[in-house]
Image 1 (cartoon, rainbow, N blue to C red):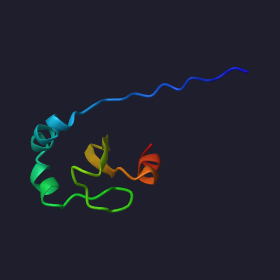
Image 2: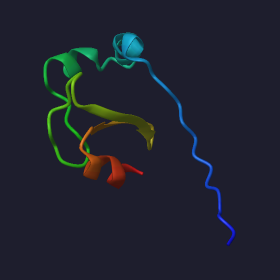
Image 3: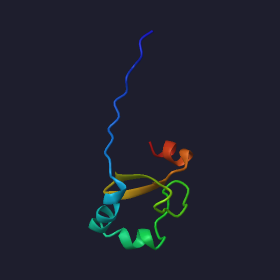
Image 4: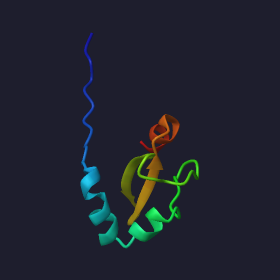
Length: 74
């Protein structure tokens, strides 16, 4: 039996760098004021439930940590 290996690109953003990252894209105020929601389920994104940040069609997409949302985002 031959197993196929799938390559997955992973970029990391450490929690300590999140504020600077969001400020650079002028999203920090919206983030801390509860005005950013999960692209998949519309749950408000916080420090505690942020699962994925990804670039899509020139904008930053926020995904919560719900396994269903993470799977749907891949």
